[in-house]
Length: 214
Length: 214
DNA sequence: GGTGTTTGGATAGTGCCGTTATCCAATAAG
DNA sequence: CTTATTGGATAACGGCACTATCCAAACACC
Image 1 (cartoon, each protein chain N blue to C red):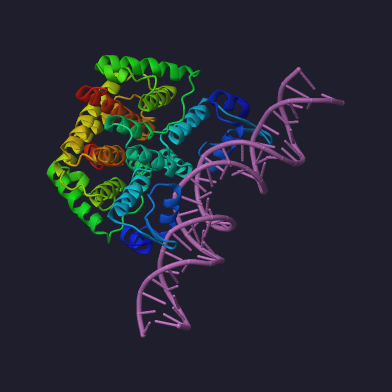
Image 2 (tube, rainbow over the protein chains, first blue to last red; image 1 turned 90 degrees about the vertical axis):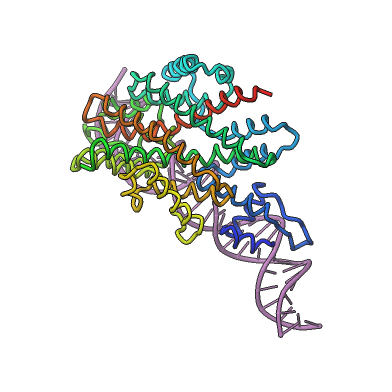
């Protein structure tokens, strides 16, 4: 399959595919001669993956490149590769450690992990981007005056733990060993907006049940 | 309080505050004379809210303006205002209704709502942006070959229903009637990244429990 | 075997967006 | 009086995701 067909089958403009090739999101096709390259089904699949990450997962192109770089890195073990790929994701602005709300959020987050018994996660607080994101979000809440709901935070955390179990089950039940890392990354990237959509639908449903349509 | 102090107290550059004023994200201060305007605590709070929505919630400026416009609209009842504000949020690209995966995702989503008994949400499928987002996400998954997990989808949905109940409880227990809409919007915008962070922490925890650090 | 089309590669341009910088005359502060 | 700061208007900036334009080489068709 050549560029034009790849474009037609994926619905992505040829100019955009060239851009992705340049940016290293898509591996080059098999070079037949100076002006011809041959693509196959793996290119099509990868292209769909890239598009899903960008359009549905809202990842910047540079992040997609980084994530896929880890996924493709055969020199590392699967677990490490997956960890590296997931840690490339979040992209919350660095918290200002001098800010009083940020420091309070740190204390609150650590307390939360203790209380939940997430001892493994606790070991990662100094380096995990997920932990940093949590601190930034909690600090933003506190800065706006919402400070009487540590209970609520723990409830949310427990629900997310259930979600995480489903995430890992999904990866486990998936057959192909080679695709496991990709599946895990995809799960992390694509289910986020999916969960967001389900949550808002649930809010609409629950709100209608409680208050009617008014 | 004048511009410089507002800037100092919020940590936002004066040029940026001027930009927000121009864009209508921040109401103008009380005009003392041609070259002086006086701001108060409500401006500071609103500014923090705007910053949180943009930096933590990753909302585009135009969306923030739209959302706040609904929040401030006194001509509507609270429920309507909240609904309008929340519907201004999502911003997933329109699904291509001719695409076979999109049509399949529609069927699957409707089936899911039936099965969950979300009869109220079902009434909104043609208009709710949350429903559209769900369809786009499911279609992306199916397009990549993951098609044996309707069970999983239902499990996620149930967890999100629990989350939604917490969301609504939080708004209910909050005192000030005037702030209820704002609280609800804030919850929708800021808890999304917070839940994402908690979920990834939970994944790290659960993964370490199951497989160790390897 | 000539002719019009398509190829990949390189480079430049486009449009949007959040922010920042520059000027300005009027006014406040010391 | 002097100096700094104010709000307002406008322009400039830097990043990002594409998109368009050129090109010569190679194919596809009759």
